[in-house]
Image 1: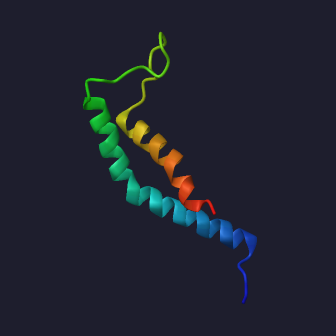
Image 2: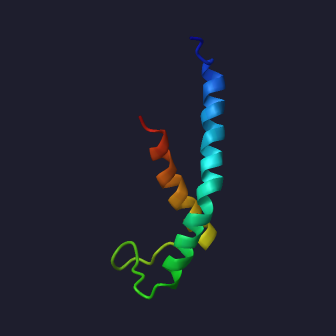
Length: 73
């Protein structure tokens, strides 16, 4: 069995990551929008204001945190 060259494998994994990001981003966007609408929103640290990020930025951050787990193993 022939294995892929390291650069080809990295390119393949990057492509897979981008495809998964594109497929899951709408779900994370919906979750971020619903999170914004909920009245029980608390700051990240007591006494400090929560960082102001757009709904799109929040969705991207959530996706970027969750998707790498698909590549573990």
